[in-house]
Length: 99
Image 1: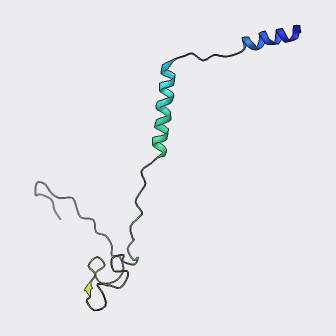
Image 2: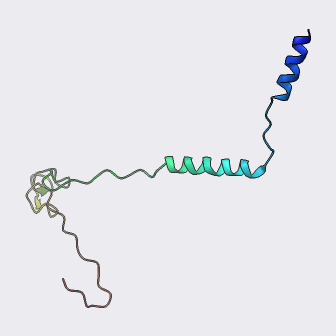
Image 3: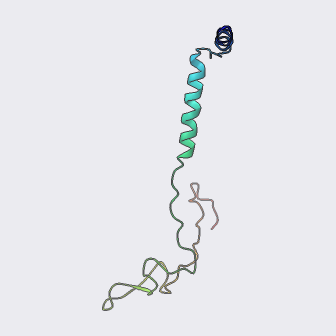
């Protein structure tokens, strides 16, 4: 019986208590929400077709329309393949850029 009383006293004295500090709770909440937002990254759009791939506009035929009425596909210039994308320079605001 004496052993149980001593064990109870020892165990009761070894319980750690955390301080009741509101700043710790606020910091934990802020860090948790920050981690959740970082995990939910914005989805990236699928990559576009690369030069040489089948043209998605005409599906590789080189023309758009039915077989009776045909118009040359302008994005692929009638080749049925995606053409190299040319990046244009930014617009000039003062009129002094050279193209």
